[in-house]
Image 1 (cartoon, rainbow, N blue to C red):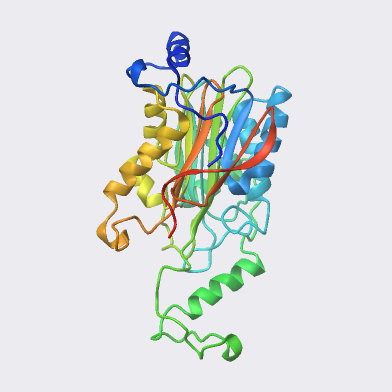
Image 2 (cartoon, rainbow, N blue to C red):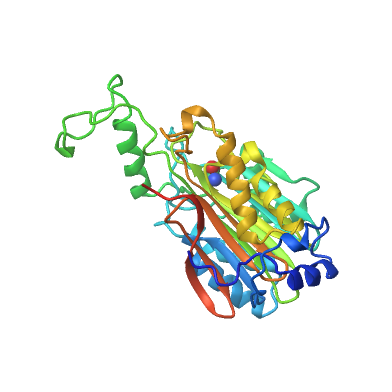
Amino acid sequence: MSDPIDISLSRRGFLAAAAGGLIASAADPAAADPAPPAAATRPVAVASANGLASVARAFELMRDGTDPLDAAVAGVAIVEDDPNDHSVGFGGLPNEDGVVELDASVMHGPTHKAGAVAALRNIRNPSKVARLVMQRTDHVLLVGEGALRFAKAHGFKEEELLTDEARRMWLRWKERLSEDDDWLPPEDSGGGPRTRAKGRQDHVYGTINCCAVDAAGNIGGVTTTSGLAYKIPGRVGDSPIIGAGLYVDNAVGAAGSTGRGEANLQNCSSFLVVELMRAGKSPQDACLEVLRRVADHAEPRLRDSKGRPTFGLSLYAVAKDGRYGSANIWSGTKFAVVDAAGARLEEAAFLYKKD
Ligand code: GLY
């Protein structure tokens, strides 16, 4: 694991942070990591691994004085617009009926305001609609038809979000779903008409989260997704739920998530990461602690023979002072980060090494 900046606070770092109001609920400084404080810098942004271009864009914008939330939204819009990313926006994988339904949330540290949309159809940039919910309504979350009408009222254009490639992936899933329905895969697809019974193998949870801190220490965050592939229509994951898929507290930091949204909804993961940072944990340690909680709470049907969760879940966090970190339940995951050293992918910390 390489995480050159994200270390636990030293006694000196802890006291400095506490004096600066970063730590409201003080942990025992004597128990803190004795390693020297890292040279964290600002601006900084973290994102899921599909967000390398996003953090680079967010950094450029923040360096030029753009608000951190606007910078993060501009960053993730690159991925929402990308037909080759099947986890977000245009080209996202659809629900079980073949219809793309998008979820997104934003949170703005300086105002502590939030906005979100869920099960939004036909609009490729749900993060921008979520920002408008925050800016132009007295609400936090709009869903389905109401969210679409709100987007159209603000001039967003409806379009078909299901690309040919995503449709073919959905069709392949549907044709192999069951031995007992009338959908047949092509004869030349190998292994006869049906190659497997219904399973979860094709159920992928893609998403992009981006959390950004500007040079002044102001924070913004966004999470946007097409959600669980082939979900039941109307299913809403963690991404548009403040506290689950995203949380920002301008006095402390921000956290967001990708992966199995149901696990985040059951554990309020992003809120908890921020609260653990408030109590003195480093971003990476806060992410790991929450993942331990998620693993402890995993249902028996979602555990392997060693009792470990069978699903993946990543958490990303930034602290107000510029430290950052990420962790996944399983090894082998990267995350995107940008700071004065440039945009790069780093290895995330993990709970369990893949066998
Ligand atoms: N984390 C994305 C989802 O579960 O919808």
